[in-house]
Length: 156
Length: 286
Image 1 (spheres, chains in turn orange, cyan):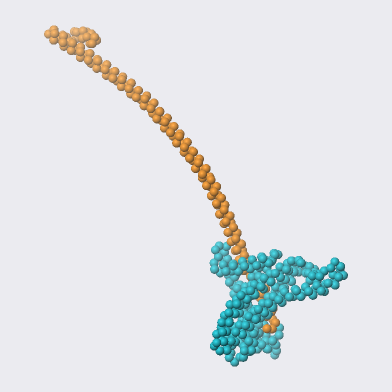
Image 2 (image 1 turned 90 degrees about the vertical axis):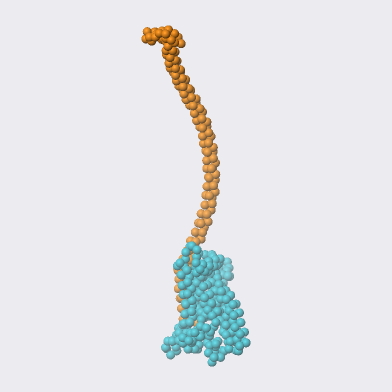
């Protein structure tokens, strides 16, 4: 229990240990702690910001949805209108086409009827000549009585 | 028990003797072979066991702490880092609580003091005969394993703290301010002549309170540890006094050791806290 050189030795080693702790233990550990503290704070702030942004996005999404709905309704209305127009248009076209077809058919019928009438006339003329031949028991030259036959045919 | 030939008195004395290296009175250098021989060596001798254990423990502490510090990440800490961070944060809280000035030295100083003293005191919990008996097998006859039961160790630290107190007192307040603190209070007067008469009185009071700081620091730690060690040694003596008393001694040793866990932690904490407080006082004008 004597006070001796050990005192100085302990004093010096104490100084060295304090210096070592300061340089190689305390500073890096406090640095790591500070960095972690900052990182956690940043993380929390980021989370809060994210939440806020999410809320904003939700709001925006709602707006967009509304707009889209309105647009869709508009488009549907337009389409309906357009459909009605198309139907009307096609009705008109159909009517015109029908009329055209009808007119063509009528003119054809008329032509056919005319042709048939011509043919009938000729036949009747011939029949009249034949009838006359039989009555007169004599051949009548068709050529000689061409004018009569034609006149007959005209009358029929 | 160390050697059956020893009496109880010799046993205690043997346990309280440091392994001392120094100059023998005849001029040769070597290890002292008895307590008396160690005393004759005077100041220029060194307690090899105190130095060995205290430096060894500090190296252990610094190795693990600097290892944790080197690999310290800001991410999820591992086991060792977690433990080290827990202690570091505890010290940091204590320093922030009682030290109001800015000084980057104080917190590492407090950490070193706390862990180092705790480890030194922890050696007290190793049964008193284990290490000395092992040392005897190696041919070393004296081995005092608890460095904080050596006043050299406690005074070494206390004087280190005291030098820092003086250094910062003078650095912060200037030589004049520090001298004024020592001489112009607690008694002062508006009359200059009376004030002059007060100076020696004030100086005696303040100087005593200044000197009391390192002495109380060192003696408090030394006294507690020395007394605790002594009780362990006394309990160990009971092992030689028959089976019943030996068993009783075992129970006592266990009880005292458990109680001692509180003391060693508390003493380390007190030393650290008072260091912080003294340095805080050095940083403030009164």
